[in-house]
Image (cartoon, rainbow, N blue to C red):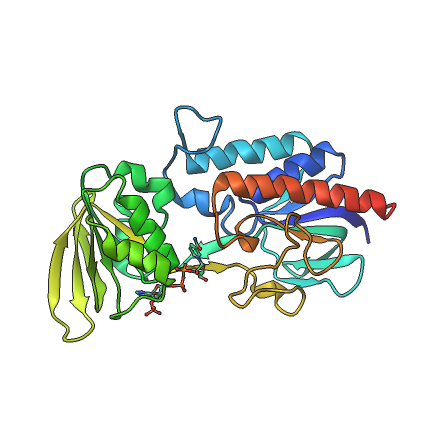
Length: 308
Ligand code: NDP
């Protein structure tokens, strides 16, 4: 069986950047695109904060450009999901659709998935007012009222960020105390533009083509409250896509891959991780691309050092 130099798992900005660099280094990577090729950017609309696109770009279009650039230098794309890996010895093994692949190095860029409320109406108004990323979409909500849902640090951050644009930010939390760190919670509680709505859950998002408001249901007495608003940011956490790596690599307590600070090295020598799968903090396309580049350089130097 052929032993590849590099297998990349995941096709967001991190994976494609790793592919561009490793293919330009003549390492002929295979990149598994998974079942949502392009990653989280495929579910966003305008991307205005990626350097180099002065007029902004649509998320899916940007991923097409990344993909094309990776292919141009010889990346072999497999539009399949990896369902099993074995990192216990080298060459590493990766299975997809029952077929086994082997590689000297593996770069993991499987990303994270924003947790969603799971409502029908959330789906209906996704990208039409509903978003899971204020940094990405916040600037589209200038001088309007918005709702942020959640009680952790992400929700605090999203609510604070939205005060720059929105006239008013309603922060909706299902309990009567935040899970967030005290310093961030205090900042939110002191902000004149933020009103916290305790003990409430989203019951329904309504509107016409775009969302116009949200009906909240009290978790105490079931009463319904109407909050007219043009935006709703779901900030109830992310889940790193690491199920297949459990028991193979060191993960932190919430499932993110642990990398050696300042590098993309994981707990297994020769396996590297980049992008959101190892980053609960920044989670931006540009930082994902940056760590994708790092993982390609780490893998390239690792192969050289090991005479492979
Ligand atoms: P958390 O898991 O900490 O918080 C999620 C919040 O969403 C909780 O308040 C939870 O409510 C609420 N929630 C979960 N599911 C639902 C639901 N279905 N409906 C309504 N509410 C729901 O996730 P975060 O993303 O906030 O944080 C993850 C980690 O990242 C934390 O360790 C955090 O400290 C860290 N982080 C750090 C930042 C920083 O330091 N700058 C910024 C962002 C994150 P409940 O409390 O009732 O469970």
